[in-house]
Image (cartoon, rainbow, N blue to C red; front, side, top):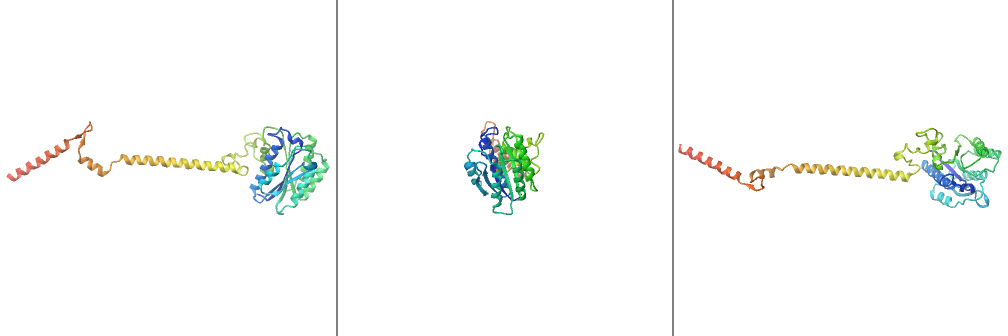
Length: 309
């Protein structure tokens, strides 16, 4: 996977309070931002991510976390965000571009993933100019548009996407309201799934692939998205296999021991044949000693007859 430096731009303006995306627009962005961070750092451990909000002090964008591969700093930045004010989309992207310009590893690709659910105040011409500047600097910009954006605002984003689109690919993902999580839509989009996106699963169109994006992985879980769950499932499967192996071995040993106990030993068999027999009542029978005495008597009589002759 390519080495990337990614700035995640979240929209924390007042419209992000709405609950048309479960559980709310802001919490959906929080989950999606965490997902993007883990996906990028899992693909390449040397990749790094930063965090920026479109509304901060004095109603201006605020850098919450510079480029890092420490998930704790991203979570801390998301925890400090307050939902308020209005979004400054163009200004926020410009500041994110400056953060990427001062990245530590200059060989890494520059990428911005921006969430937008608030009205865009910049004009289409301003966004096109900004997109051309981003393209000139080699910065890819992925935009996730959701919420009740008007057609005019979506046209602005489409024009911006056409201006910034370069060789590495800049994508515009429009997510309509619905019961699905925002992070599921991002998983199925080219933003995380690559240029082709996630393949559709058992339905028409790519929307059905969001729910079944993990069916190609072991246990149905993508390790890059939830490594802890995948590890727990793998350990549980190994423990179950070991338990079944122990039960099988114990059953085999028990059946082998029973078979050996059913076979009489040679020494005990000889002693039993020379001893007293047991009749049906369980008492010792005297028939064997009497027969032996009669045979000895016959041998003695035959020996006397031979001497007389």
